[in-house]
Amino acid sequence: MITLYDYWRSSAAYRLRIAFGITGLDYNSISVDLLAGEHRSNDNLIRNPQGLIPSVKIGNEVLTQSLAIIEYLSDAGYHHFLPNAPLDKAHVRALSYAIAMEIHPVCNLSVAKYASEKSDKITMQSWMQHFIPKGLIGFEGMLKSNGLYCFGDQITMADLCLIPQLYNADRWGVDLAPFSKICVIAENLNKVDAVIAAHPDQHQV
Image 1 (cartoon, rainbow, N blue to C red):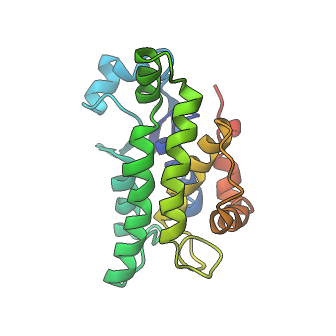
Image 2: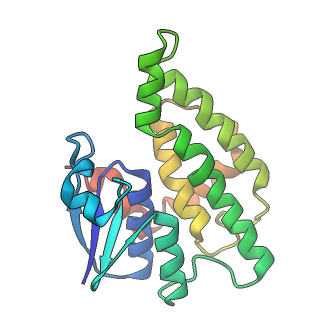
């Protein structure tokens, strides 16, 4: 049995919902309410000493960090979210990291909230509208694929990172029109059953 400790609007958890949908793995979802501070509870800290979500329990093991979990699913043979060739794999990782390690940390709600509280010139929306497009410009420039998705015609870890980031961009009123490659990829991804099923609207608590 696989248990996903989830929150409906968490980008990192959203990535894993898509991943589990694509692999066809059944899982049980348990909500950890970030707004209520449940991620700082003793139970969650035991699972995840960083006090973050998601965490995934597989058998007696608990895994943390969404990209590490996605790579585990690849290594365990459930679905190849990374290409086999070393250079191709490096490119998909670079795309994934551009979102998960560059855009996401800066645009984490706790970071944006802290910035807005420290300056009367910054709002959470102005913060997001500054940093999300800046990150997406770089991501758009890194795309080399002429296929359906971020890297060819197979959904990779980069796609799992992109879709939740675009959800946040839309939420904060970011204009995506300048990102033509990203918009085409998003249109293709949003036709995939696993992507549709993972959308936050389907998991709202």
